[in-house]
Length: 333
Ligand code: AHM
Ligand code: MG
Image (cartoon, rainbow, N blue to C red; front, side, top):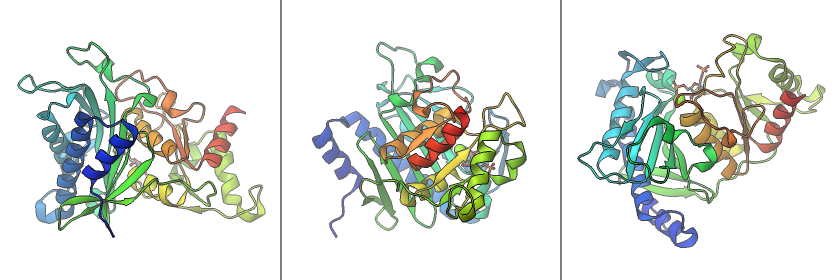
């Protein structure tokens, strides 16, 4: 089999579609390299003294794990010096991180969830990194938080890495979704799936069902119907999967279909679900749409939402288009 590296793939995409100028290619390669470093740290586990808590809290009041902090540092350091970025924002940092003055300033903004699936770190279950790239607004001199507040439809790149049995990187630059597998011996990313497409028909759903007593009526109705199986209105049996790492759940859906839900619920009426628009929902929505699926917050297309805050949360329904359409319709009724 002829092996196509990430670099070759990006250069060929640029020739074909003219959407990945050299600076953007550098950005993607630097992020991919940082993911390799994170993958290496994850793989060491207890031997690398990377497990357990960092004894600190992030801006959302969540206890940080050592690997949350390490991964955040790895991404910041890797991306500071290349001249491709103006600023970064992370789920783990209160505010934005402008590129230090000693380095040239580029035209892109990078956002990331450095280590997604934190609750799985210490138990050796798949975790990952999610990232999203925006263009800095024209004429921006000193980057500010407001420069990041662009709807997801403006993303130029989105992707994630999964640190699981294999380490994979899944990427879109707006021309389909492509998957690379890390060759650990060679240290290189090799193209292993071109043009991933979410199957339209599905028999799988993913939701944290322990919250069901708090769900709003449309979500209750939708999940009840799935659970009624072959004797209910859907006329077929559904299976449930919940990894509790969005990267792993979305990766499964990109490969064999399904719907992923993290709704808002009645517990904290002011809190719109758990997942964050800028670091989780937007990049995953871009990938899912590029793979032929759909992503909504129950009312609107996720990519159309105008963000108001960097760390804004949003309900998420994404995956096979027909299922997302159905649960969204239940919300509208
Ligand atoms: P994190 O970014 O702090 O890891 O939180 C996000 C994660 C998602 O990966 C996952 O889908 C969800 O939280 C799991 O939540 P729950 O603990 O309710 O199962
Ligand atoms: Mg996360």
